[in-house]
Amino acid sequence: NFYPVPPIIQAELYVRIPDDMRCLGKDTEWRGGFARQFQHIFLEGPVVDNLGDLYIVDVPYGRILRIDPGKTITVVATWDGEPNGLAATHDGHLVIADYKQRILSFDPSNQKIKPLITRRHLERFKGPNDLIVDSQGSIYFTDQGQSGMTDPTGKVYRLLAGGKLETIVENGVSPNGLVLSPDEKFLFVAMTRSNQVWRLPLHSDGTTTKAGVFFQSFGNAGPDGLAIDEEGSLFICHPSLGSVFVVDSNGIPKARIVSGTSGINLTNCCFGGPENKTVFITDSLEGNVQKVNWHCRGARSQPRLRTMASTPEYQPFLKYSDDPAAEETSPPQHPVKRRTTVLSHMLVFVATSLVWGVVVFLIVPSPMPTSSTQVSASTHPTILENHLAGIRHNVTSGKRLINCGNSTEEAKAQGCKYDILLNHWVPGPCFDKESVDEYRDDNSWGAFSDINMTHRLTIDEMSNRDFYWTSIRDHINHCAIMWRRQFYVLFDERRAMDTVVTSPGHTEHCSQYLMDVTEGMFKEPTKTMRGFAGCWIKD
Image 1: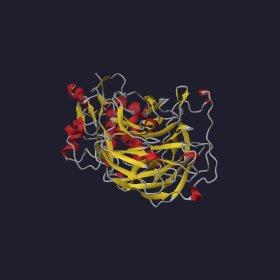
Image 2: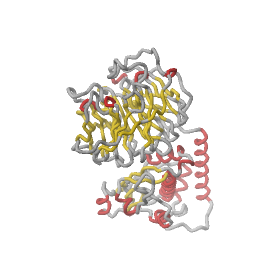
Image 3: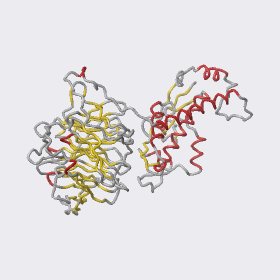
Image 4: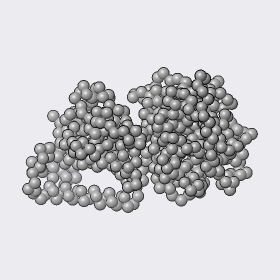
């Protein structure tokens, strides 16, 4: 290494799991790689939510522990498993990489754990180790098992939000922790037994090529958990060397974090704290969590989890058979979204009011002129009849679809325009200039290049980036505008309608988003991905 020795930063003890919360004297078949050292606890998989609660797993005893900002520790789930990694989904659940039970889902609202996916085709996973969730809701996870230098068969998978499972790596040398670059164009995977971190470019079609070694180390055990900050610096936990190595986006050493206690088994880390600038590190064998204050934020904002219910008793887990047909969870199952009673009643009231408003509007003549884009009920008398008769129809029936391609160059070549409210390129016939100008002219629609929302982007800059940052308030406005457009598309039976407006998945996303958000979150940043929409046209 031709670079100077990086500065050493000593972590400080954040919290120690007290003896009365450890499984003292309780037997377990888990031994990991520390059979002679392991006693009664082994911490891993840290995740911090937007309330400042830190979640960690106790691998040998199948537990999830929650540590609140006041350092009160609660066991929130216990089951017959060996959890090693945690990640938060967009709908407020935790997904779990469990060596024994494979990939699981934990619903904080009822504290139940269910299998999410347990096998690829007919073959059970070797033994999942860690996992992450990207901005589109896809779950990346490592299937480590007992792979190594003499058996390089570890795998990395991506479970898409729709349930499709894709294989990204098939020749992993003990794949362990993983993390995405801030722009999600690269995937970093710790390969423990080869003492490396691999860097994999991710292409738009889901494939990867030209994977390479980003970081090379030494020692008895190699890299474990990974984290990344907003500048692209990678945090590499290395248990046998008692360090967390920090390298920049080019792999140049920036710092070495060492333990602030007698323990050196620093296995995993994550960002959290009031400004998302605190690095929390699990010291697994000692059963404590350490922390370091960092100069910038983590690359991803802290997730919002569902409201936690009271702690249940130990949850006996279903036993798997060797026959996939007899297994309860052969297809991937995503958690069912739950809504509170109050919000459900509010939705029913709003929906009912809207329906009655439409009926009254159609029946009672109005002296107000309609715009050139609207069609009155008197012009189309079948509209009222269909509404009152409850007749449903597919709004895309009898229409042809035109697209903008999959790149900015293709979109411009096909005459598409960038809709700042949709965050999509859309074909000209579906571009709603009136509503776009409404927000563009008063400068109230902001997009930024950084998570701190300090560098504002022009519309041209927005349209050329893969993603940018907006406020949660703007995300709410986006959903409201989509519903307004959706109403007039259906009510007026418009000739052209974009594929975002007609998407059931987008409508479901917006409805859940509005029910989960709180007023205190309005100014928080949210990552917005640029897209390419189609347009249904009735000739």
